[in-house]
Image 1 (cartoon, helix red, strand yellow):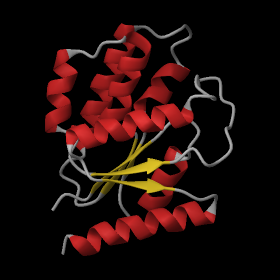
Image 2: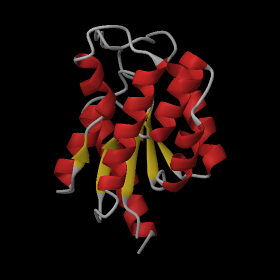
Image 3: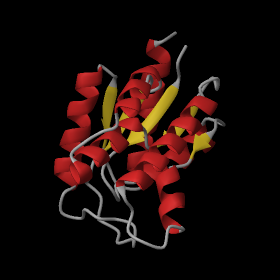
Length: 172
């Protein structure tokens, strides 16, 4: 059974924090968002080519962890697809093909109901609602199951645990 959980959502919606909280709670791997690591060391504005490299490495991390009985991913291919569309108005064909094969799991969309936290890598403080709408539309198009995560602090974590428990119980 696929117990792959992808945390998606706009910037500053708590994806990273929640990924590693859930991974710790369930004693399962939490897989980092490669884009942050890459961009922190880039030293210049990113390009389409950089985004392709980021997409390829995030895909590699997903494939590398597909065998895990339960795993939590800090971001996914849907987020990257929307990033390609919003910044460059095109998505590489290779990426679309891979997305169909390696995106299966349950998606937790972190809602932008928590305060924005500035970060030098973040670009869209006023577009979080719009971006979350795009992620949700892409999930519907792909046919992937998803749930919205809301709340602040401990409440957000508890709401995410309820979702994960629901998915686990429904699959038994």
